[in-house]
Image (cartoon, rainbow, N blue to C red; front, side, top):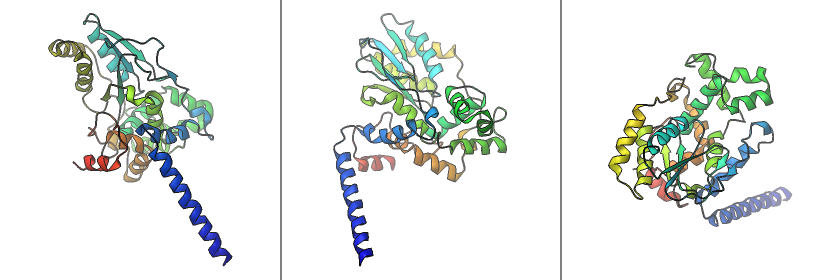
Length: 303
């Protein structure tokens, strides 16, 4: 009898917990609020505090007019190429300003026409890992500082393009590290916590020039002739080299199990932008939804 009573109490507690959680969720006004929980969990990870991202500052204090384009950088999402492309293009258009917010700055309000960048999480993870395998990047440095060189070394690739069976196994070990799980969502939320203030997102796993042109056209549409900007963009792009990355294709590194794990850990980005699966391209949305109606997400994903 005592056992039955205890079980009933446990069930009631669980039911009340679910009701409370649903009530809180129903009061949220913006979809990214539901995504900040895994972000905080990763950033504040008590076991690996030194691996968390640096605290984000708000965007620049100065408020620029709509003739100013602001690019908010998301690490390893074609930021260097996009920055150079915008700098070259806008330098030829009088009356247009260009500002860059680093990954340590979260999107501010009313700072101009703001462009962000997002990348399919699996592909993004491969790029971050390959960058670290070359001994580069702040994330690898933090791992070395906290875990030590001896423990960090086996998590990274041996020699570019890091496509041997040994390197693939090293990647899968790295991507399962507790300090790595959910990192792409953490980085995204770090830069774009004020998601509604981003005017356009560049999808970094597709044609970068085309994506940059799409967002820049949205900026120029406020006042100017699109023919001028398109011609200028093509000229600027021709003079630049895109960094193809020192690694094999995304699907080289993922078996079914590893892919499903990343999809689970990075679900906010898949949910928000609509990538079909790990290493897939071209999400069906160019910007996160402004509604929490998951039936709409499901319907759109089936189209």
